[in-house]
Length: 231
Figure 1 (spheres, rainbow, N blue to C red):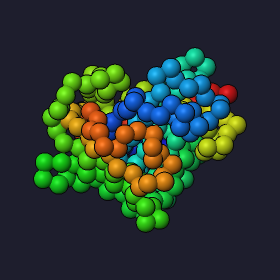
Figure 2: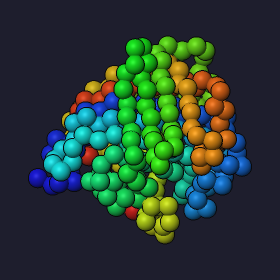
Figure 3: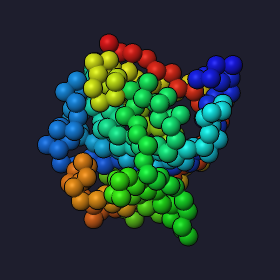
């Protein structure tokens, strides 16, 4: 059995909350996106917090993760550039960095249910890097890229793309998902409120006072990650 590609998949069960925003500050978006990639004609950001509950084989164990992704183009194809991806364990950090994911160990990441809400938070160096609060049920009709979210059962939305070494290059890698066991998704759609500390790198990119259409999703199945170099 390969440690990186177990027969029934490395990721067996997880849950997460996610949103997409296309009403963002275009200049800040372009400054955040590496010059290697072409800005998307509709600047977009996606944010998520996930709890990977069952992960195999050891020493991979349960861990949590947050992410900020930017929509872009490379070689004429659409991708999500992974701008940042904090995690809670060293094994998934080092494994992810080999694939170009800009992972680091955060002080705390959690995803938990509080009454009728799901709360996801990333804390590092005593700062709130990302806070997502999901409530089921839509307050309004989806707008623009939010429709991509509510028309999708999967938690994953398109292909990711990374620089390797992370954030530097020159190598460019994408990561394909290999479903080793049929995926069972259980999405719920609703509204997400977002908070980040003032002065954080994504502060000012979007309107923090607004609620955005979002997703809570649970996965049971088996997925392996298959990185591919694009240059």
